[in-house]
Image (cartoon, rainbow, N blue to C red; front, side):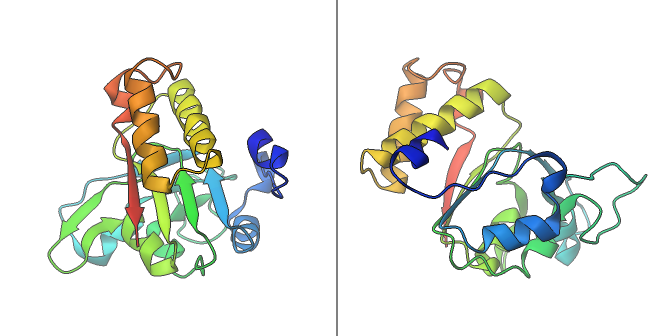
Length: 189
């Protein structure tokens, strides 16, 4: 946020109880770049089909307030299936610095079913996602370095490539281990 503000870009930060599905949906529709630092999940499926889109998502405020997720916009879980209905065509980049946001079931017809598919259907041009659980400190520092490279004028893919090199070379605190930097993938739709 500091880097964006220093460059004169408008920044809206949301946290805690303010991050409901309805509030996020309204705010994210106005953004060019959105970054969600939260928890992600992916549950392997043997059933396949559309149900896979109910097995991946991110955690928002209110999650866990009820005993079971309710699959509605008040349960605190934003499932891939729900996200497909959002209009995210104004987003040039969505960063989900959360665990397993890039995972999904492989499908002959639609590629990787899960958040990557949902984000593509919702219109996101690019999404920086992770393939497995990642450490908080390393992930935070990794994404800061990624934004620094973007601010230097690098393209999204070049910024990611350089950030991975920096992490590998020990220039990003907490991200030198490949379990952090190699988890990040850029999906382009």
